[in-house]
Image (spheres, rainbow, N blue to C red):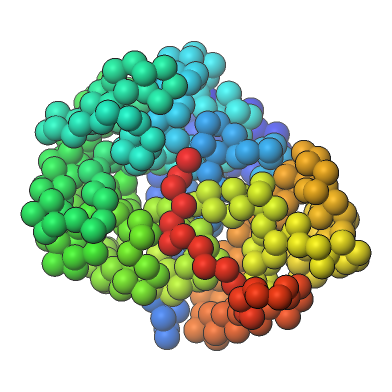
Length: 426
Ligand SMILES: [Zn+2]
């Protein structure tokens, strides 16, 4: 059953009222496009789910196993986060969907009253599980926890996400590792389309049964081959999905090619449904993807980096442990108004990381989530004001300025260290 009826009367920092509980069966999902930038393809919109409103563009922190590591729900709300992503693969193995459902659903179990998007589990099966085998039936795999043999089918992926009480579920797709031969990409597109139809049919079956109220997004595939992506969407776009995701990108193809595919997909996607770019969370990628028409993104990168002592700030990427900050009284980001930046110095953060104090991870994570949500909020305001192109130019100039960053001998003069194009969702 769907949980999350524990409304606490929270008012967000943007002044929106707390979401009201919605009776089961109303299927409350909707997307309203509120503004489109005239010089770019950037959009501002609003998603409604049974757990309230999600302002778009949205950045979704990743709560892999039912928690955004080190952070409480209240801390996420203080950052104005209104949606997070949780991982079907992890939760279905531990504690198991039966336990989550018995505890009233994921919202109630983790004390989170806003929206949750769940992935299909396919990405983790492909990236974490040993001995996986993809057939038309689904993906056979062994649990990375206990080695038990499992099958994730398109139907099972939908049932699990329904059992978790997800607000937005994802269709199971086949992700191919790039580079891949054209026939491999083509076969993955074909299979993804069949699985998409089966997933939708399964949700329909659940709805006949009084369940399956969640929204369901289809995932476009085709890797970096524009023709395959177009072929995939020609059929996917005709299916009754509530939104569409851009799959198979940020897996090592590089920012330039990835953004070309984003532009290509967004031009084909319908204007009236949300567009979700999976696994993207570098601030530059977020700003560039929004410029091309993306509405939603998720990535572990900002929070994972933060736990390791590296944070994104408005002028670049700050390595907290850097010795140059040992007596630096400035906050992590002088332009940030998060709790961490309001209260603590770089010197203190550096000390906490050097001494392996857990508070360092927490304070850096608080900043990381706040920074990303604030970034998409500013992007949203810029779209609404019809000045996204100027916003993007100002953001990029500032981000690459490194003006408040320490410079060490041998470091990249811009303070930007090459990073993997994509960090796996954990
Ligand atoms: Zn901050």
